[in-house]
Amino acid sequence: MQKKDLISTKILRYPSESKLQMYRTLSYSGAGISLILIALLAQIWKPSKALNLTLYCSAIALPFWILLGTIYEYYILLGKQSYAHYRSTNAQIFIFLGYLGGGIPLLVALGSLLYFINSRSLTFFALALVATLAIAFAFTSSLTNFLKENESNGS
Image (tube, rainbow, N blue to C red; front, side, top):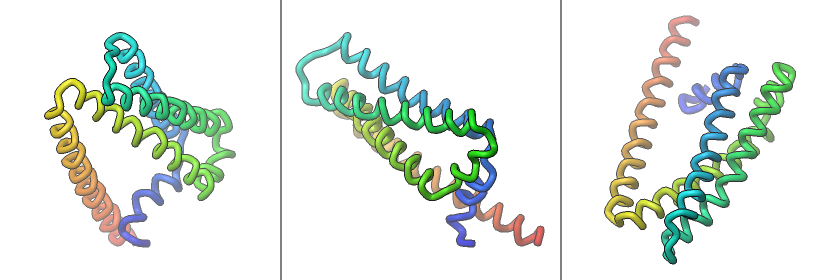
C-alpha cells in the first residue's frame, strides 16, 4: 500500500455512525456559513464587485453543503448495510464533487468579503490558508508514517 493511501484507506474501510454524523455536521455547518454570509450581505449591501462575488459564491456553495449533509444523513439512517456503498468509488466521487462545489465557492466568498472590508486582509487570509495546508500535509505525513511503522511492527 502506498504511503499516501494509508489514511484514506483506513478512513473509508471503517466508517461508523459517529464519523458520518461528524461529516454531516461539518456539511451543515458549511451551509450555515453560506447562509450567514447571504444574510449579512442583505444587511450591509452596497454596490460592489467584491460583495457581488461573495453573494454569488455563497449562493452556489449553499446547496452543495446541503447535498453533502443529506448524503451523510442517508448513510446514517440506512446504517451498516449502506457502508459498502459509502466505500464505493461512485459514492466517493459524489462526495468529492460536493466538497468541491461547496468548498471552493465558500473560500472565494470569504476571501471576497475580506477584500471588501480591507484588501490587505485577503492577503493574510491567503497566507493563513497556505500555512494551514502546509501544516495539514505535515500532520498527514506524520500520521501516515506512524501508522505505517505500527503496521510493520505489528506484522
